[in-house]
Image 1 (cartoon, rainbow, N blue to C red):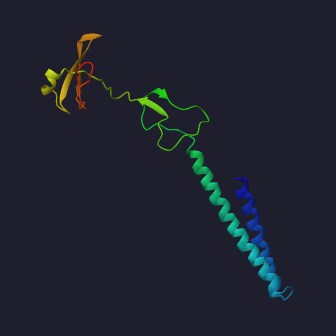
Image 2: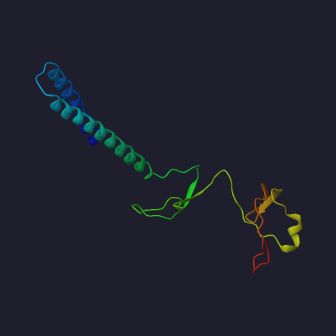
Image 3: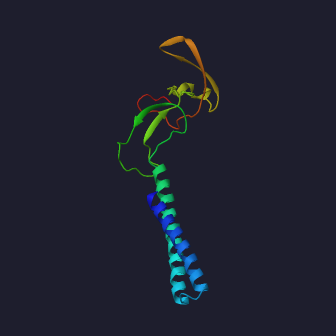
Length: 152
């Protein structure tokens, strides 16, 4: 930001100086060559100001990449990075559990797979409280049975 302010100050000085030099040229106190020098200095300061502003924009944009913002509310269940670590775009840094949805993995015996369909509504009982029924839907069915349990 200080570089931008310095470039703006230099540009304002070049504008004022060129204005003074034009007045002197109109009164024939300086040559056209001297006026050309100040016009070139103004062009240089204009280009320098544009460059410094562009660099400030890039720096500001890169600073925004240092903050991680979740796309939803939830609870952090896993952190895969350390403070100061350089990470790649698209790399998983934090795993967040969505509190609005709960995903449950259910093992279904092969003999009952004909009754299970994707997107079908289901009622789920947990071992911890078998009196309570939870409503849900089948999101995904494994394409192959687990080799140890032979369940899907």
